[in-house]
Amino acid sequence: MTTKIICVVDNATKTDTGLRSEHGLAFWIETGQGRVLFDTGQTAATLSHNLDLLDLKPQDADGLALSHAHYDHTGGLEAILSKNSGIKIYAHSDLFRPRYSLREGEYRSIGLKITREELSDRTELHLNDSPTEILPGLWTTGGISERPEPEGRSAHHFIRTNEEWQPDPYLDDMSLVLTMSEGLAVICGCCHAGLLNTLFHVESVFNTPVIAILGGTHLVTADRFYLDHVIEVLQDRYKGLHFYLNHCTGKRAYQALRRVFSTRVNAFPAGTMVNFNG
Image (tube, rainbow, N blue to C red; front, side, top):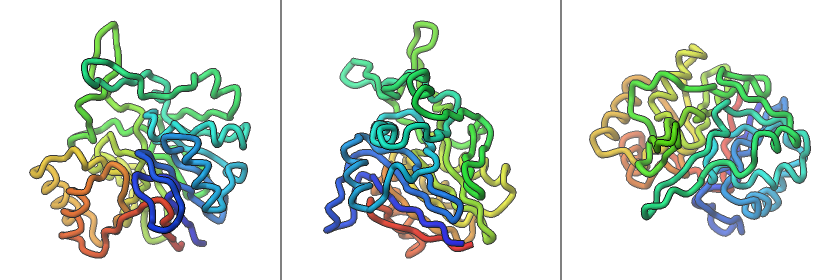
């Protein structure tokens, strides 16, 4: 059985495709058991345009998974809700916590623009902190609570608790896991929980080797010393790993990984498709 993963929205696009780019991310995942959209990009207009050009229909999606609440991953929700009422949505229970970005001394909302009640009225909402199977062989990671390694953190992200501003703990951050006979593919949205923390969690839960990482890894904020550490761990612990990277990975991190892992590191702009067999 072949599973195909198509990047629908990303900061970059394949050339000469007519696809639109924006600071956001969305994947279309199609297995022999069904179709799932993972995240929705930043805007409904870009998501709709790209889905249409890629001949992918929102009404054909059996489910929608959300990696976390930020606008660049949930902003295109309406493009799906307007075409696929009642769709099953999978996310972490902390998804609806208000989230903010501090810019020029002002806290601006960057979380979901729809309330839990409104979304529940229009969809079949599954909020679960434990790993959840969306389709046979396609799982959420659930919440990633053990974080011994640095997170994929941005200094300007905040939440408000007891009338105080605090750094966002990113409790809602989760990835997807595709299970195959030869190993696991980890599909990341933004990896705010931290790339290594996410991989350690997946190993612990599924007890199977990770053979591929796709998506946004939030190494864009990693300094040189931590990036060197990440590469060392990946070399020692994850033999033969393949990478399909985009969004918040960052140019510097991409180039560093490419220097070490060579052709096993690939860019994954909108319009790109990766196939996994088995």
